[in-house]
Length: 507
Ligand code: ADP
Image (cartoon, rainbow, N blue to C red; front, side, top):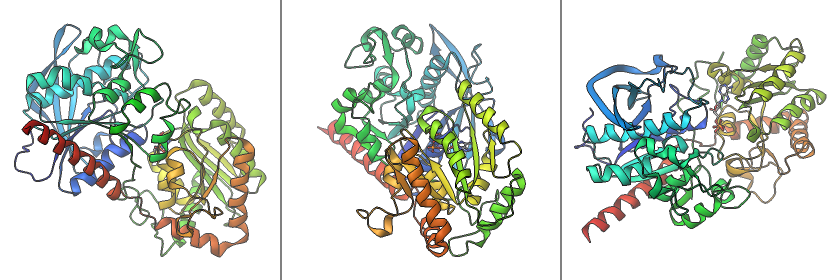
């Protein structure tokens, strides 16, 4: 185990279900790595605890080895052994937990979407704390993320503080309040929590069903710090419409609740050094962007006859949250306006996947539109670099990373003003925003008309004013979306929580 006693700074342990690039489904994976790296750079000891999935990108893990220890953990009335692996991902020390449970919890070929997800992740949350206890860790902060590791908060106070793992304050970040991890109250007992004691309206009871518990609610109640991933989303979830049933809980814990905009990992997302691109480029030399556009067109079999035909990209999970009806509409509208469209996306929702497969087939040989319906990290990089515009017409968007990545690659965002998009994309035509912050095209109403207005204005700028467009591209590429300032905000929250704990223990 890593020794932690002599390091300056705080000892921060993230317990999470995702970490880019080894185990990533969406933004959560990017945040764990990006925030972790930024905090490490500021002199803190940062460690990560992850499940050892069978479907991880193992080639991105350095020095992976099994430890000569077995951690036994309680579940469903008995103890199960867990094999512990360590390795380094993006310079961060990671513990991987491999349960020796007959349910083969992390050997399913996918991270989520299994019938027993609640069981799998409540099991994982418990082993993660058992590992910290066993390894005699004395973290200052245990940071858990989303419903999958929300169990850590009640487990910590109810079971692990009494066992002596008591040095930490708990920080919980909710990356999306749509996913709350609810189950019949009795299922909570599997991981050792007391369902009778916790199934109360002021604790873990789901706000809309008194025989169910809600793990995200539990983490809100039992954490010292609760954050979400943008200031606007933090406001939205405090309303009945945005809180998905948790607004009352969030409001009654509002003192410890704050929205901090995510950053992006500017090393991983850097057009000047990105090996996935045909040609690297930078804000001071954007010619390379055109070569990437050509490369993408060739790769996907799109027409290259006009270099300046605008290329509109979309990189997303195809779920209702992302505005799938507007994404579908955008393909047709872009073609009508004389542009090219590339979609990279896949859907966990079978009817949406089928619908987009039909559209993909329809455009199979089209010279100006291509749909690639899979998850493809390498292709995503090339699309960010190649496209002139990127659409993000989300119905709601806790933070959103694609608009920031797009800007870093000089692709201008066309986004709906919601959540983190509202905190990072500012309309070029909005006179109420200082000129230096205007960086894209936005719309408010989530309908075709609203979207058309933004897309058409973007096309007009692009077609009629090449020089202004180029300036906009360069301006966007120079915006600082690194984790630096967001990580400082987390650091401040951690410091305050640790200080409060120390003051309290002295008095
Ligand atoms: P969410 O977390 O809701 O999926 P975000 O915008 O926060 O949305 O993060 C999405 C991340 O996943 C980005 O890094 C984006 O590039 C990546 N991504 C989404 N879909 C795909 C895909 N089909 N292939 C490759 N990367 C994808």
